[in-house]
Length: 510
Image 1 (tube, rainbow, N blue to C red):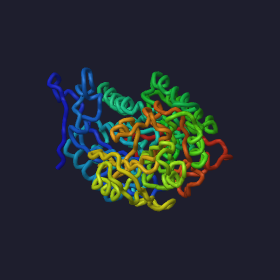
Image 2: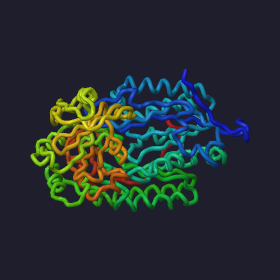
Image 3: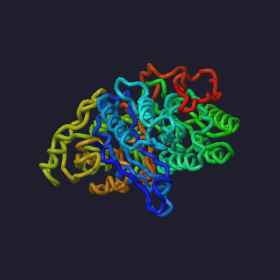
Image 4: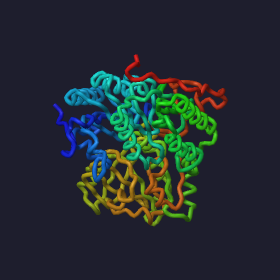
């Protein structure tokens, strides 16, 4: 039996407070990657450990004292390939057992990403919430929090009573959005209003990568900036726009708008207005940075007098669902004569998994030399394992993702090799390995748009169109199951019907 935790303050009797469980599984899963994701990748938490991840449950005037919060099961995996059916079923068994142990429940805070794919299963989040609903019953209010790069299927929309998503990409408002989902749930329970009278849904036939829809730039900046005002209108609880997830080939993968509230006309007007603005802007979405084929991107980086110059190796971005071990880009870097000299342009490459090479480096120690291969253990479609020979300059143990990290200097290139794949988003990820990214000529990261710390660090940057499981050139991907027509795959498609579809209440959904 899972160990489950509760939180309640003695100043208010537990009987007066709603009982609210927290559960959810989160991952982005590329169906264009050969990788699969196992149960261990979710690092599932239970009980008090779940509540400890939310800052809005701590400190004065927190949400902690307004309910009895019950941690069940929550797991968040690095993006990757489809989840194995065995992993999904095991995690679901634990989740459902945890919920049964906490019945009865007034509410459920359903904290997910929304872009999970499971081998042999259609619409995993829809399946997840339907099975949860069977356990918690029709009267429990479910408030769903999602990433704006998730997908909203009809079943997920129907089984959710309240639903919202992030309004920023990069996701600087992640915790703000989760808090909004929890507060919306509390407000409906405390007021006795219960589930909203209306849930409006509009499917928008647009499928774009996050790197083209960053809220740092137009048109996404203005489209999302309109949402806060909408939520202040009488009769509206919340409004949300999902970009969707571009690297899974499933019918639910597309943009969507949902608005919830108690005033039919206000909800309809808001939903159709947001959908129309998104559709009207479809041809204006552009990559958040200059985007070039790899050779052109590297040529620009070498010619630039702005340092550090960041180059995003986008096609294998592990935080979008890439396997993280495609060697195509690093192979080309190491082949260039400029980088084969110790006094060549300094370049940091982050990163490539290679557990055998890491073990060799650990044995050699800092200052020792190694020669071996790394990468392409999972995704070898574009290049074989890459040979790396050089001097070990750093060894670090204990990272939650990489486990063990080493830096191997070969020519003027410092390659970060990891026991397990890891995204590099923060300056400390580099400096604790003895690297100085601010002083490097070029920094290459397996990423799409730069995360805030890296963005603030760069003197210039470019995103390279490289191959992998999250190839940014969507027209190169072999879609077979998404709903067509779909922009931009079908550029001349007619204007779609963007009128509201009313989602049935969760207690009326069949």
